[in-house]
Image (cartoon, rainbow, N blue to C red; front, side, top):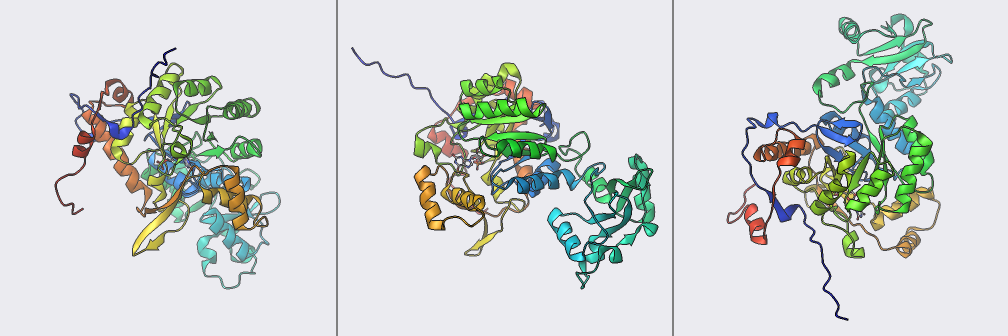
Length: 491
Ligand code: XMP
């Protein structure tokens, strides 16, 4: 029998195509509305999500992204307590009213108060007795220059008799006036019995004005998502993250079109009730459809697309990202479940292409790993500042994970490296990425490019962009022409 020639599909990615310019009546970039959804029930005003990688998203990144109108996904390569604490920092960072302020007893030391203020990154602590009756307020300023760290907080706090407070249920306008008239920055709220019932801070009120498009929950707190795995402590982790106020869980597994991912998604939905769950990663129509059928509230798309991935090289598996997004968007279309295009974004134009192809948002790793808000210090190499980025399936990340799991008391590092290699070939790499300053500058570039891109397609909204977009496949000569050419670049 004659063997027939296999019918290969064609996979394209961002650099393979351009969007054909269309007639546009978009008068200004400001008229291009970038509002979208992260998941079924979480709206965003900018379609940008920070990746659940340990060199990208902890609380600082999640706070910055939510303020800008996107959302961050706190990675899971932390102990449950550490990850919960990162989520709490986001949820407590600002809100209309902080309902459960951080408190300390009057006999605790200044040392403990300093540690709490530093670890929780807050400006002050309400001092309460055993029945939560307010005894005073201790601010950063009260203790910064205190030499005697063994002093009791009751000796240095502003006592109740001098404290400005308000009753629970005070309106925001009234609260603002009280803060302003008394030149104070924190307003503890008391119930009828003098017990602590909340806290309003001038910093939060200012933040609300400064970031009008922030991604917030019904209580005015910044939104944050958090990743969980598919085995081990994943259910305990999921439960505690939700208790801490996480707005969505992201089931994080490299091959999301798998029994593991689908079972975990169903388990979370069954056991934890009405919770927003993002599932992934997949790269095919069937993969997206199966996750939607299993209950996903958003589908994360990208296999081997990331800048630090070597999955395609190591396994021979994957789908170029633009095709993956288009196929998955087709799979999820009838359900209305949003697609998150994860990985491979290098330029603002890639964001426009991903969204035009059917993604509702893009997830970004390494582009954000170089910013101030990513975890980890900057390093200096030949006078240039860098930050570290690494794949979560890289050798270094896997070894660090083991060290954390064993609490540092396990095998030596060289033994751990051997163990990790024995378990499987690493599917990620690690590298340095130039330091880029604050993440808002990077987001501004991405969103600015997107708005211009929408205007070139004649789109006032992202749904219009999807409808009007016309992709043209280009040749390598066309790609070369797209880049600056035939000049000596000066900047
Ligand atoms: P970018 O291109 O934005 O991609 O840096 C971020 C995404 O890459 C994925 N990721 C990995 N993929 N091996 C992989 O094959 C890895 O070690 C790895 N680490 C992260 C992930 O989806 C992330 O959001």
